[in-house]
Length: 419
Image (tube, rainbow, N blue to C red; front, side, top):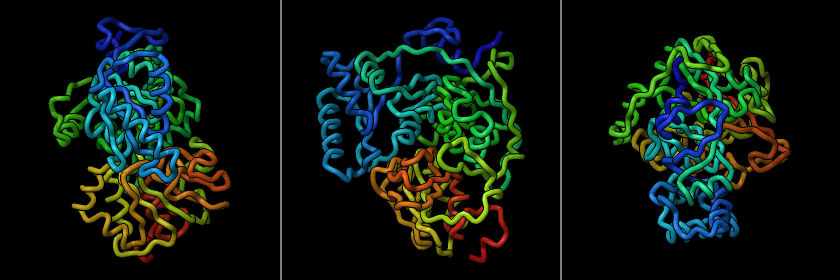
């Protein structure tokens, strides 16, 4: 019998065959935390009374959630992390470098790796065929110290994709569609393995968006095959030597199979206050939008902003529009392409690379009763800093169209050019 992606990666890393449902201790290729989870991971490390990190060059702390910090206690957390990294020799992603998940795929993540991070959207790196998963700060503290982690091998769902995206339909719509089918806990501690000829029609940016949100239906990770698209992406990042091909076996022992015809997917939206509360955009009528946010580890890549710019060029938005590039690299690329000029002239506010309004610490906190349409990955009550606000999730294209009209808008609607 064949093996799933997960079995192939974890078996090779351990040097022996692994079985789903069983617990093993695995070596890690990368361990990271961010400024929200890092201080607790450091506390755990210190409580272990271990003086040295096993492999500091493979441990990274990112200052991305409160970047730059709006309050003294958050600035003090940054100081704590900087001092720890300087003392131990760990790597650091400084303020303004961008979101941890975006920097990981740009610089570090590669096929066949085991990556653990103190952030639930660590699964983003599964788009590069890494086994990448989020863990609590306690486990991450141990992983920082020892370079290894215990883990139960997850059973896998085979998510078979076919077809191509239609115009103004995006990968964000695919993953919202899937989360709606599975439910918020429908894949708890499972690995979502994306297979089928439809995967070859998705860019790396598309794959990153889909893998990023696998956790929103409870999954341990969301993983794509390593193929020519993977090779081309790594080459574009100057890391062609990191490539290795990892394919799936058609007779692998999947616990469940889900079939999605990409061509049938329409623009989707998650309604408050749960990501799996999904609807087709065209079925939600007359929803006034106060604020639109395009950015984050889900919708903050150059291709996202370029699609938004196509809609907004030469026009003016009717809702507040916040834009936050996912990384310094994305910012510089956007500047070169003239994207920021288009979005700012349309009325957008450019924020520094980082998590921005997504986590509700600063930069775009909602007022009571306000509605935000966001390209982010979560819309829990209070997520953007105010439990009396309402967050809807959609693709960057839907966000741009809605900013233009001031109402939730299907980006395929005729007449957008008249605004």
